[in-house]
Length: 265
Image (tube, rainbow, N blue to C red):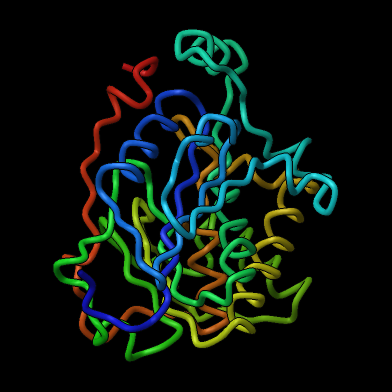
């Protein structure tokens, strides 16, 4: 059923009724049980997934991390609602922006099970098991992504905010040009748990610094707080790179925003 021997984490962050439904449909109908496949959900309502029987299945609410990371509740909280119309109303009235960087907590979920290959997927995305094989795990500390990638100068207005934070608070210097990745779907192939820790810790530090210093405004997107620039700079300084042979077929993305965030259309 699979063509590789390593452990793999399949991760979905899903907040709100429409996103939860899409994630649940994939977990139940697209995926399968295997001792080396782990499924991690980060959500606003863990009760929604109570009937899932998939093996190696773990669900956390973002609130589960509030005690250890109290600023989450202030800066990166999830909207809560059991009804999609009510959720849409709150999203619009509160001018809510979904905090994309909450996906970093999948790294902590994966760490608990000693998993270093971590797929963070939009709920409209999935792994192509017909293609994914051991060769994709041969090189370490790499990131496969969909849909695109591009280069940004380190002195770009938005990028400079992150570059300066890394330099001033961590003593880390980026290259002059930084590879930025679209993150509709991504697969990290990391060397070991120490690398998982390093990615989480610096991501946690930088995002917290940007929020507390009111520097996240330049990353406000249409419906979310974007983090492509932030992560591009972090990958640069800790040595997470593109694979030598980019195989986009291992990640499949089928965007359907009019269904998942219908209130914007």
